[in-house]
Length: 176
Ligand SMILES: [Zn+2]
Image (cartoon, rainbow, N blue to C red):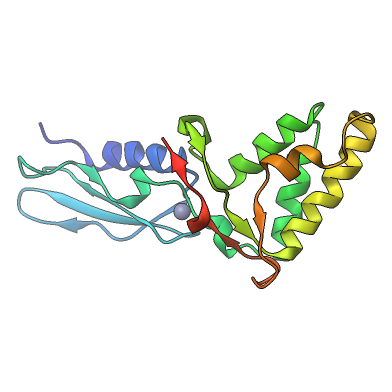
């Protein structure tokens, strides 16, 4: 059955949105028996392709953007990191909620992850900012616990040689 390009686009967009992408659509391409269109995430540049009449061995919605989470955060600068980190601490009662929110920032598909062995690595700017906030949070919410202790155990690794506001995901071992 041939799907309408409009409904296909809506379906693809929803799927990409669930992985945090923001899709910019290029112009439709019309062939005699099908219409195709490519969308590109404005943040991470991953692609999604739709095809109203795919070949039998093909699918109507394909591309990295429907399979992988957005890597938008790789381009964040100091200002954006601070804003996003601040949000993770807002309205949280327990330090574990903060840790989860921080991981969700960089793993939009966090709910599907079984375990993370080694951690992603960040520069000193990100690391110091999180520790500063985590210690202040613990002073208030967990006065008897080691300040910043949970982030020390569960948090990201720090590399002093890296750019202060950069992140390297390749050091993480994620199991789905
Ligand atoms: Zn993206």
